[in-house]
Image (cartoon, rainbow over all chains, first blue to last red; front, side, top):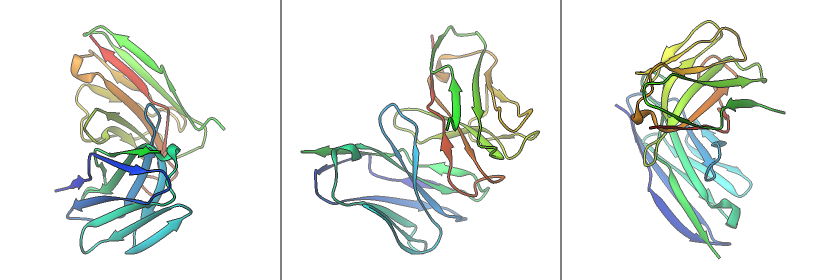
Length: 109
Length: 114
């Protein structure tokens, strides 16, 4: 089966660093996505990890460990505009994308 | 660049009525998807289409139907709406046939069934 688990809500301070974790259990693996979704808006793509390791894109980095069924999204130099929900998604054995419920990130000044 | 356009943005519908949510993309993407998003739950796939002329059932297809007559359009129809279909509906597309990369989402259609 497929389960995508991520924390419901996190709070961080402007200028700081925050790590959002995502764990998954799946009988098949074909990569893991991270999306950002501002309130009332559509999700937008952040990253897609297929291989183990860290991929960096500016202030955002995404890490994957396939053996541990674990990924995280690292956000550096937090800005108020980073307040959003962050969605983790992975594939099930039927190659369908399964989404976590999202982590609501609240940035405080 | 328009990307994916959904209509209507918001709708209130009486239970038992039918409704079609429209989705049009101008990126010539092969695959298109319909998701619903409910508070506390992840996006759930309703139906998908890997290429024009084909459709498939997702995780929660009951009460919904789709068609894919051409590459650009992928309407979602609720034949007889029920209150449990109150949700935000997102249409999405991806370039390849299936999940080969980034999904592009429309702005969503908020549907309330009373």
